[in-house]
Length: 341
Image (spheres, rainbow, N blue to C red):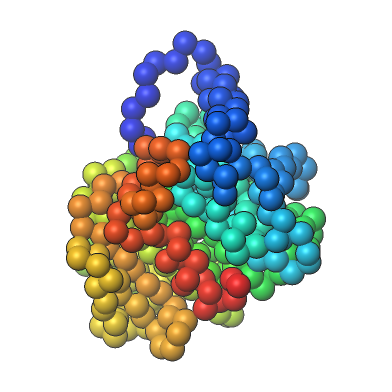
Protein backbone atom coordinates (compact mmCIF):
# COMPACT_ATOMS: atom_id res chain seq x y z
CA UNK A 1 0.00 0.00 0.00
CA UNK A 2 1.86 3.10 1.16
CA UNK A 3 4.99 1.05 1.81
CA UNK A 4 5.19 -2.57 0.63
CA UNK A 5 8.67 -3.96 1.15
CA UNK A 6 12.06 -2.32 1.21
CA UNK A 7 14.49 -1.38 -1.55
CA UNK A 8 18.20 -0.50 -1.25
CA UNK A 9 19.02 3.18 -1.55
CA UNK A 10 19.22 3.90 -5.31
CA UNK A 11 22.29 5.44 -6.88
CA UNK A 12 20.16 6.85 -9.69
CA UNK A 13 17.11 9.08 -9.15
CA UNK A 14 13.95 7.04 -8.64
CA UNK A 15 12.42 7.84 -12.02
CA UNK A 16 15.62 6.81 -13.84
CA UNK A 17 15.91 3.65 -11.75
CA UNK A 18 12.31 2.70 -12.60
CA UNK A 19 12.96 3.33 -16.31
CA UNK A 20 16.12 1.18 -16.23
CA UNK A 21 14.25 -1.60 -14.42
CA UNK A 22 11.54 -1.61 -17.08
CA UNK A 23 14.12 -1.74 -19.88
CA UNK A 24 15.91 -4.68 -18.25
CA UNK A 25 12.58 -6.45 -17.75
CA UNK A 26 11.49 -5.94 -21.35
CA UNK A 27 14.91 -6.97 -22.61
CA UNK A 28 14.68 -10.25 -20.68
CA UNK A 29 11.09 -10.62 -21.81
CA UNK A 30 12.01 -10.25 -25.51
CA UNK A 31 15.14 -12.40 -25.21
CA UNK A 32 15.59 -15.58 -23.20
CA UNK A 33 12.18 -15.09 -21.58
CA UNK A 34 10.49 -15.80 -24.91
CA UNK A 35 12.03 -19.27 -24.96
CA UNK A 36 11.30 -20.03 -21.32
CA UNK A 37 7.74 -18.66 -21.54
CA UNK A 38 6.52 -18.70 -25.16
CA UNK A 39 2.92 -18.04 -24.11
CA UNK A 40 3.94 -14.75 -22.47
CA UNK A 41 6.19 -13.27 -25.15
CA UNK A 42 5.28 -10.52 -27.57
CA UNK A 43 4.19 -12.99 -30.27
CA UNK A 44 0.42 -13.04 -30.70
CA UNK A 45 -0.15 -9.63 -29.17
CA UNK A 46 0.71 -5.96 -29.33
CA UNK A 47 2.03 -3.74 -26.52
CA UNK A 48 1.19 -0.07 -26.84
CA UNK A 49 1.83 3.06 -24.77
CA UNK A 50 -1.08 5.50 -25.04
CA UNK A 51 0.10 9.05 -24.41
CA UNK A 52 -3.17 10.88 -25.05
CA UNK A 53 -6.37 9.60 -23.43
CA UNK A 54 -7.90 12.72 -21.87
CA UNK A 55 -7.06 15.56 -19.52
CA UNK A 56 -5.40 13.03 -17.15
CA UNK A 57 -5.66 15.07 -13.93
CA UNK A 58 -4.09 12.20 -11.97
CA UNK A 59 -0.93 12.27 -14.14
CA UNK A 60 -0.93 8.51 -14.70
CA UNK A 61 0.63 6.52 -17.56
CA UNK A 62 -1.35 4.13 -19.76
CA UNK A 63 -0.04 0.91 -21.32
CA UNK A 64 -2.15 -1.62 -23.24
CA UNK A 65 -1.72 -5.26 -24.25
CA UNK A 66 -3.95 -6.28 -27.14
CA UNK A 67 -3.75 -9.96 -28.15
CA UNK A 68 -4.53 -11.24 -31.62
CA UNK A 69 -7.88 -12.62 -30.45
CA UNK A 70 -8.98 -9.11 -29.39
CA UNK A 71 -8.43 -7.52 -32.81
CA UNK A 72 -12.08 -7.83 -33.82
CA UNK A 73 -14.70 -5.40 -32.43
CA UNK A 74 -16.56 -6.42 -29.29
CA UNK A 75 -13.71 -7.74 -27.10
CA UNK A 76 -13.94 -7.41 -23.34
CA UNK A 77 -11.72 -4.88 -21.55
CA UNK A 78 -9.84 -5.60 -18.32
CA UNK A 79 -8.00 -2.94 -16.31
CA UNK A 80 -5.30 -4.16 -13.90
CA UNK A 81 -3.99 -1.88 -11.13
CA UNK A 82 -0.55 -2.67 -9.70
CA UNK A 83 0.51 -2.39 -6.06
CA UNK A 84 3.21 -0.19 -4.54
CA UNK A 85 6.72 -0.53 -5.99
CA UNK A 86 5.36 -2.74 -8.79
CA UNK A 87 5.87 -2.40 -12.52
CA UNK A 88 2.48 -2.72 -14.23
CA UNK A 89 3.68 -4.93 -17.09
CA UNK A 90 5.72 -7.19 -14.81
CA UNK A 91 2.70 -7.70 -12.52
CA UNK A 92 0.47 -8.48 -15.50
CA UNK A 93 2.87 -11.17 -16.71
CA UNK A 94 3.72 -12.73 -13.33
CA UNK A 95 0.09 -12.64 -12.25
CA UNK A 96 -1.05 -14.45 -15.40
CA UNK A 97 -3.18 -11.67 -16.88
CA UNK A 98 -1.20 -11.44 -20.13
CA UNK A 99 -1.54 -15.17 -20.63
CA UNK A 100 -5.25 -14.94 -19.80
CA UNK A 101 -5.77 -12.04 -22.22
CA UNK A 102 -4.33 -14.14 -25.03
CA UNK A 103 -6.39 -17.16 -24.07
CA UNK A 104 -9.71 -15.35 -23.56
CA UNK A 105 -9.23 -12.57 -26.09
CA UNK A 106 -9.64 -9.44 -23.98
CA UNK A 107 -7.84 -6.09 -24.12
CA UNK A 108 -5.68 -5.49 -21.05
CA UNK A 109 -5.26 -1.89 -19.84
CA UNK A 110 -2.36 -1.28 -17.46
CA UNK A 111 -2.35 2.10 -15.71
CA UNK A 112 0.90 2.99 -14.00
CA UNK A 113 1.49 5.39 -11.13
CA UNK A 114 4.31 7.95 -11.34
CA UNK A 115 7.00 8.45 -8.72
CA UNK A 116 6.21 12.17 -8.95
CA UNK A 117 2.79 11.40 -7.47
CA UNK A 118 3.99 9.00 -4.77
CA UNK A 119 7.55 7.97 -3.88
CA UNK A 120 6.60 4.26 -3.83
CA UNK A 121 4.28 4.64 -6.86
CA UNK A 122 1.17 3.74 -4.84
CA UNK A 123 -2.20 4.72 -6.24
CA UNK A 124 -3.78 7.40 -4.02
CA UNK A 125 -6.77 5.32 -2.88
CA UNK A 126 -7.12 7.37 0.33
CA UNK A 127 -6.91 10.90 -1.10
CA UNK A 128 -10.18 12.78 -1.41
CA UNK A 129 -8.72 14.71 -4.35
CA UNK A 130 -8.07 11.46 -6.24
CA UNK A 131 -11.05 9.28 -5.30
CA UNK A 132 -14.13 11.40 -5.97
CA UNK A 133 -15.98 11.01 -9.24
CA UNK A 134 -14.71 13.52 -11.79
CA UNK A 135 -11.43 14.23 -9.98
CA UNK A 136 -7.78 13.22 -9.88
CA UNK A 137 -6.55 9.68 -10.40
CA UNK A 138 -9.97 8.08 -10.50
CA UNK A 139 -10.95 10.35 -13.41
CA UNK A 140 -7.71 9.47 -15.21
CA UNK A 141 -8.58 5.78 -14.87
CA UNK A 142 -12.07 6.42 -16.21
CA UNK A 143 -10.59 8.34 -19.16
CA UNK A 144 -8.26 5.43 -19.92
CA UNK A 145 -11.25 3.10 -19.95
CA UNK A 146 -13.23 5.31 -22.31
CA UNK A 147 -10.23 5.81 -24.61
CA UNK A 148 -9.61 2.05 -24.82
CA UNK A 149 -13.29 1.38 -25.53
CA UNK A 150 -13.16 3.80 -28.47
CA UNK A 151 -9.73 2.96 -29.86
CA UNK A 152 -10.02 -0.83 -29.65
CA UNK A 153 -13.81 -1.01 -30.18
CA UNK A 154 -14.35 -3.04 -27.01
CA UNK A 155 -17.76 -4.02 -25.66
CA UNK A 156 -18.90 -1.33 -23.17
CA UNK A 157 -20.99 -3.93 -21.34
CA UNK A 158 -17.93 -6.10 -20.62
CA UNK A 159 -15.53 -3.86 -18.73
CA UNK A 160 -13.74 -5.15 -15.61
CA UNK A 161 -11.11 -3.97 -13.12
CA UNK A 162 -8.83 -5.80 -10.68
CA UNK A 163 -6.06 -4.61 -8.40
CA UNK A 164 -3.58 -5.65 -5.75
CA UNK A 165 -2.91 -3.82 -2.48
CA UNK A 166 -3.03 -0.06 -3.19
CA UNK A 167 -4.23 -1.03 -6.66
CA UNK A 168 -6.93 -3.19 -5.07
CA UNK A 169 -8.14 -0.36 -2.88
CA UNK A 170 -8.14 1.90 -5.95
CA UNK A 171 -10.09 -0.71 -7.93
CA UNK A 172 -12.82 -0.60 -5.26
CA UNK A 173 -12.79 3.23 -5.43
CA UNK A 174 -13.12 3.12 -9.22
CA UNK A 175 -16.08 0.73 -9.05
CA UNK A 176 -17.75 2.98 -6.47
CA UNK A 177 -17.12 6.19 -8.42
CA UNK A 178 -18.20 4.83 -11.83
CA UNK A 179 -20.52 1.87 -11.21
CA UNK A 180 -22.22 2.32 -14.58
CA UNK A 181 -18.92 1.69 -16.38
CA UNK A 182 -17.94 -1.70 -14.92
CA UNK A 183 -19.65 -5.08 -14.97
CA UNK A 184 -17.52 -6.53 -12.16
CA UNK A 185 -14.23 -6.19 -10.32
CA UNK A 186 -11.77 -7.87 -8.00
CA UNK A 187 -9.86 -6.56 -4.98
CA UNK A 188 -6.84 -8.47 -3.69
CA UNK A 189 -5.34 -7.49 -0.30
CA UNK A 190 -7.13 -4.13 -0.45
CA UNK A 191 -9.39 -1.99 1.70
CA UNK A 192 -13.01 -0.76 1.68
CA UNK A 193 -14.00 2.51 0.07
CA UNK A 194 -13.98 5.51 2.38
CA UNK A 195 -12.05 3.90 5.23
CA UNK A 196 -9.41 6.67 5.11
CA UNK A 197 -9.24 10.27 3.97
CA UNK A 198 -5.53 10.99 4.21
CA UNK A 199 -2.16 9.24 4.43
CA UNK A 200 -2.19 9.05 8.23
CA UNK A 201 -5.62 7.42 8.33
CA UNK A 202 -4.56 5.07 5.54
CA UNK A 203 -1.60 3.79 7.56
CA UNK A 204 -3.86 3.33 10.58
CA UNK A 205 -6.46 1.33 8.62
CA UNK A 206 -3.77 -0.81 7.04
CA UNK A 207 -2.57 -1.72 10.55
CA UNK A 208 -6.02 -2.05 12.09
CA UNK A 209 -9.10 -2.48 9.89
CA UNK A 210 -11.66 -1.17 12.43
CA UNK A 211 -14.09 0.18 13.33
CA UNK A 212 -15.33 -3.22 14.45
CA UNK A 213 -18.88 -2.13 15.30
CA UNK A 214 -19.61 -0.31 12.03
CA UNK A 215 -22.64 -1.84 10.29
CA UNK A 216 -22.75 -2.98 6.65
CA UNK A 217 -25.24 -0.16 5.96
CA UNK A 218 -22.81 2.39 7.39
CA UNK A 219 -20.03 1.01 5.21
CA UNK A 220 -22.27 1.23 2.14
CA UNK A 221 -23.12 4.82 3.05
CA UNK A 222 -19.44 5.71 2.59
CA UNK A 223 -20.18 5.17 -1.11
CA UNK A 224 -23.84 6.10 -1.53
CA UNK A 225 -23.33 9.32 0.42
CA UNK A 226 -21.00 10.52 -2.35
CA UNK A 227 -22.95 9.31 -5.39
CA UNK A 228 -26.60 9.32 -6.38
CA UNK A 229 -26.65 6.02 -8.25
CA UNK A 230 -29.97 4.28 -8.95
CA UNK A 231 -28.74 1.50 -11.22
CA UNK A 232 -27.02 -1.81 -10.55
CA UNK A 233 -23.74 -2.10 -8.69
CA UNK A 234 -20.83 -4.08 -10.15
CA UNK A 235 -20.22 -7.58 -8.84
CA UNK A 236 -17.09 -8.00 -6.74
CA UNK A 237 -14.57 -10.75 -5.93
CA UNK A 238 -12.54 -10.13 -2.73
CA UNK A 239 -9.28 -11.89 -1.78
CA UNK A 240 -7.15 -11.74 1.37
CA UNK A 241 -4.56 -13.87 3.11
CA UNK A 242 -5.03 -14.37 6.84
CA UNK A 243 -1.28 -13.87 7.41
CA UNK A 244 -1.13 -10.49 5.65
CA UNK A 245 1.31 -8.30 7.59
CA UNK A 246 0.85 -5.19 5.42
CA UNK A 247 -2.94 -4.83 5.23
CA UNK A 248 -5.02 -6.13 8.12
CA UNK A 249 -7.22 -8.98 6.76
CA UNK A 250 -10.15 -7.36 8.55
CA UNK A 251 -10.21 -4.88 5.69
CA UNK A 252 -11.35 -7.68 3.37
CA UNK A 253 -14.17 -8.43 5.80
CA UNK A 254 -15.23 -4.78 5.86
CA UNK A 255 -15.13 -4.61 2.09
CA UNK A 256 -17.42 -7.66 1.91
CA UNK A 257 -19.81 -5.97 4.35
CA UNK A 258 -19.76 -2.81 2.28
CA UNK A 259 -20.40 -4.47 -1.07
CA UNK A 260 -23.03 -6.91 0.16
CA UNK A 261 -24.95 -3.97 1.62
CA UNK A 262 -24.73 -2.10 -1.70
CA UNK A 263 -26.42 -5.10 -3.31
CA UNK A 264 -29.01 -5.29 -0.52
CA UNK A 265 -27.83 -8.72 0.64
CA UNK A 266 -27.85 -10.02 4.21
CA UNK A 267 -24.35 -11.13 5.25
CA UNK A 268 -25.83 -14.11 7.09
CA UNK A 269 -27.03 -15.55 3.77
CA UNK A 270 -23.52 -16.49 2.59
CA UNK A 271 -22.93 -19.87 0.97
CA UNK A 272 -19.61 -21.21 2.27
CA UNK A 273 -17.27 -23.49 0.33
CA UNK A 274 -13.78 -24.91 0.97
CA UNK A 275 -12.16 -25.53 -2.44
CA UNK A 276 -8.91 -26.70 -0.83
CA UNK A 277 -7.49 -27.15 2.68
CA UNK A 278 -7.00 -23.77 4.32
CA UNK A 279 -9.02 -21.93 1.67
CA UNK A 280 -12.57 -20.67 2.13
CA UNK A 281 -14.93 -18.94 -0.26
CA UNK A 282 -18.14 -17.21 0.78
CA UNK A 283 -20.69 -16.15 -1.81
CA UNK A 284 -23.63 -13.80 -1.53
CA UNK A 285 -26.45 -13.73 -4.06
CA UNK A 286 -28.40 -16.29 -5.99
CA UNK A 287 -27.86 -18.27 -9.17
CA UNK A 288 -24.67 -18.83 -11.11
CA UNK A 289 -23.57 -15.20 -10.83
CA UNK A 290 -23.46 -14.22 -7.14
CA UNK A 291 -23.11 -10.52 -6.46
CA UNK A 292 -20.18 -10.79 -4.05
CA UNK A 293 -17.63 -13.42 -3.12
CA UNK A 294 -14.87 -13.35 -0.50
CA UNK A 295 -11.85 -15.67 -0.49
CA UNK A 296 -9.67 -16.24 2.58
CA UNK A 297 -6.35 -18.09 2.26
CA UNK A 298 -4.66 -19.49 5.36
CA UNK A 299 -0.96 -18.64 5.71
CA UNK A 300 -0.87 -16.19 2.80
CA UNK A 301 1.06 -12.98 3.43
CA UNK A 302 0.57 -9.75 1.47
CA UNK A 303 0.45 -10.66 -2.20
CA UNK A 304 -1.40 -11.96 -5.24
CA UNK A 305 -2.10 -15.74 -5.12
CA UNK A 306 -1.48 -17.81 -8.25
CA UNK A 307 -1.23 -21.51 -8.94
CA UNK A 308 2.03 -22.90 -7.54
CA UNK A 309 3.09 -24.48 -10.84
CA UNK A 310 2.34 -21.25 -12.72
CA UNK A 311 4.38 -19.29 -10.19
CA UNK A 312 7.38 -21.52 -10.86
CA UNK A 313 7.30 -21.12 -14.65
CA UNK A 314 6.70 -17.36 -14.72
CA UNK A 315 9.24 -14.67 -13.80
CA UNK A 316 9.54 -14.29 -10.03
CA UNK A 317 7.73 -11.35 -8.47
CA UNK A 318 7.92 -10.34 -4.82
CA UNK A 319 4.20 -9.75 -4.59
CA UNK A 320 2.97 -12.78 -6.59
CA UNK A 321 2.82 -15.93 -4.47
CA UNK A 322 2.19 -19.59 -5.25
CA UNK A 323 -0.84 -21.13 -3.50
CA UNK A 324 -3.21 -24.09 -4.03
CA UNK A 325 -5.66 -21.73 -5.76
CA UNK A 326 -5.12 -19.41 -8.73
CA UNK A 327 -6.75 -16.03 -8.17
CA UNK A 328 -6.51 -15.01 -11.83
CA UNK A 329 -8.43 -18.03 -13.08
CA UNK A 330 -10.95 -17.86 -10.23
CA UNK A 331 -11.58 -14.15 -10.81
CA UNK A 332 -12.06 -14.69 -14.55
CA UNK A 333 -14.47 -17.49 -13.71
CA UNK A 334 -16.40 -15.14 -11.43
CA UNK A 335 -16.46 -12.48 -14.13
CA UNK A 336 -17.79 -15.03 -16.61
CA UNK A 337 -21.16 -14.50 -14.93
CA UNK A 338 -20.94 -10.87 -16.11
CA UNK A 339 -20.12 -11.81 -19.70
CA UNK A 340 -16.32 -11.84 -19.76
CA UNK A 341 -16.35 -14.55 -22.41
